[in-house]
Image (cartoon, rainbow, N blue to C red; front, side, top):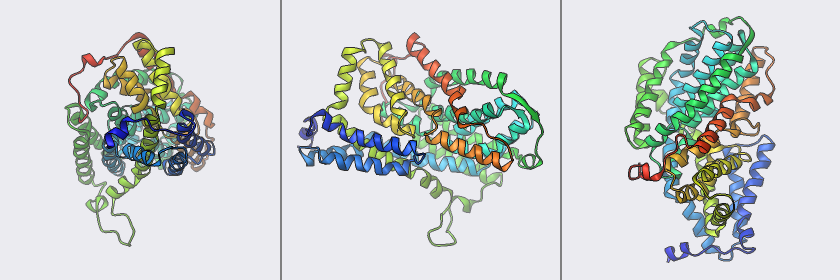
Length: 471
C-alpha cells in the first residue's frame, strides 16, 4: 500500500501552485533571515518547520502528505550525508585543536615573504586548512585573526589579503572530501567519492591557479612590519596535521567508503595531535568537571554539525513534497521542451539552477539538497552524464556566487572575523564589498562554464565503471 501511495501524485488544493507553498514559505523565511544578517542553520530550522506545517493545510490527503515528508526525512541518501557529517565534524575539531593554524602561519612567515607573495601564501594556507577541516566558515574564523594582521604588516593589499582567506575557504569547501558540499553533491548523485575527487581536481585547481596569479600580481602595496605578538605564535609542529588529511584523501581515492576514510583520518589526527603535545587524551574524551559540560573534542565536533544535520533533514522533507506533487517533474519537462535539448545545454541548466538556488539561501549544502536529487540528477541522467560529472558541476556552481554575497554564512563569518582582527590591531578593514571581487569564485565560475561549453573534463555514464550508490 505504501508503494501504491508513493506512485500516486500528491494532490494539493490549488494544484501545482498549492504544492509550491512549502517551497515559497521556506525561501521567504531564508531570504528574510539572511538579509537581516540572522541567517544560520539553526535559525533556518523554523523556516523549514513552518514550510512543512503550512503546506499540510493545502494537502487534499493529509496522511499522504505526512508520509511523503517522512519519506524525505528517511531518505537513504540523507542518512549517508548525516553520518558523514558526524565524522567530518569531529575531524575538523581535531585538526584545529592540533595546531594546524599555527603550523600554517609558520609556513607562511618563515619564508620571509612579503606583499603579493605573502598574499599568495595566505591563499595557499587557507586552501590547505579548508581541505583539512572541510569547513569554509571555520577556515575564515580560524585563520583571519592571525593571517590578516600578519599580511597587513607584511605589506599586503588589505582587500586582496582578506579575499585570499575567503578564496582559500571556498577552494576547500569545493574540493575537500570531508566538506559538506562534497558529501552532499556526491551522494545525491549516487557518485563514488574517489571519482568525484579525482575528476573535480582539474576544475578546482585550474580556478585556484587563475586566482593565484591575481593574488601574486596585485596582492602587494603596503608597508612591511611584523608585529612581535604574531611572531611569537609561530609553531611548525601543527603542519604535521596535514598527514591526517592525506590519510583521508588517499583512503577515499583508494575506493574506501567515506565513513571508513573519515574514521582513519580522525584516528590519525588524534594520534598526531597527542604525539606533538598539542592535544591531551582527555581533550578528546573525558569526564567534564561540571554537569552539562563538554566531554571533549568529539562532542564539540558533533555539536558543530547538529544544526546542519537537522536543517538538511527538514530540507529533504520539503523537497520530497515538491517531488511527489509533480512540481520538479514539471520543471524538468518545461526545461527539456523549451531550452534543454543537448548535453551542453543540460550542463548549463545544472550550473544555472544550482547558482540560482544558492543565491537566497545563506548555506550552500542545503541549496544542493534542494536541487540535487529532484532537478540535477534526473536532468543529468536524461542526457547520460556521469554521476561524478553531475556532482562536480553542482558543487562547483554552489561555490561561486555563494562566496561573494554578504548575507551568506561564510561571507558574514569571514567579514566579522576581519573586522574583529582589524580592531584588535588598529587596522582599517576593507569594506564587505571586497567579497564581490573574490578571485577564486569568479575563476571557478569561468572554469565550469568553459568546461560545459567545450566539453573539457566531461564524462558520460557510459564511461563510468558500474556504480557505486553505496560507495
